[in-house]
Length: 122
Image (cartoon, rainbow, N blue to C red; front, side, top):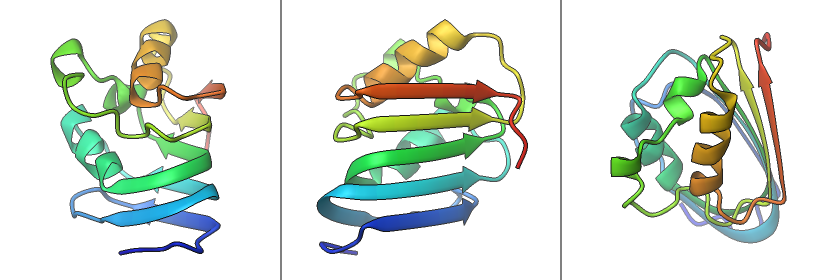
């Protein structure tokens, strides 16, 4: 789906299906809440489908494990290469914040700000 004038995107649900969205608007702000636990490769494929020039993205997941992309996966393109500001909220505390931070910097190599909040509700 081409969305050249989109400025705001919100999604809450599963990642069991494919969504493809292309938006060149670098002022796009988004909020994505993922229900359930998934493997990192499922999350990678989901994020790769959202080929947008994100300004700010708020991503809420159950566990940070789903956002930990191991070295063998990092041969793939970075899924959020155009993202500037990322806010990650996890429902569960994971305890590997530095590894998660490294993984998110690979996923979003142009980040200007990264906020990780563990144990967040809602």
